Image 1 (tube, rainbow, N blue to C red):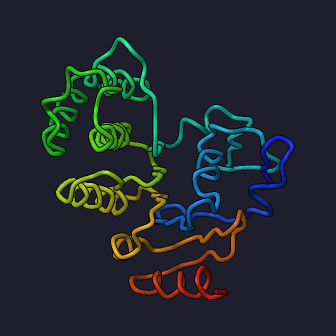
Image 2 (image 1 turned 90 degrees about the vertical axis):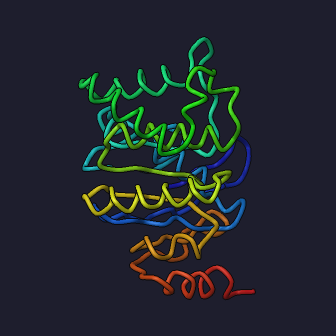
Length: 227
């Protein structure tokens, strides 16, 4: 896959990697390496590229069903106006679920676990960065997708919420859900991930299986090794 901004050189070039079904995959790189751009392409938010993104055998650029097969937790988002936080989460989750009563129970339980019950009547655009992140994470859990893509999901979260986030992701992964996560905090994610892809200056420099401290060693070898 290749991608370039208008009238500029390629930002991403010869991008080629795969994520095994059921894995907990880390997508790692320094600031400006192309992580968020790549993730947005995978999530179907940017179609201006050469190549293919295939999820469960479906081409994301060409098939709308491919885009319905995953949940995406962005680093930043602008919410619609005229709606409160509870309504936003509930109505968005209803797009992929039809069990209204069960959804309400789960939503209220997650709001309690993430300790943001008090913000349900506020417009989500008025929330703090940490509260917004919690809203997006709750939605991802409620959508019950088999593949979840998360771009820096722990940023702005307090320690308690970070613990609950990774506990929830670990639980879902053990149930067979594929996780792709972008993060700068390697020590935090090394206990959860089983594979990793490193990107540097818009190119994939290594991709493969890792376990525990191997993640740190591979990062030092492939990201820091040429310095």
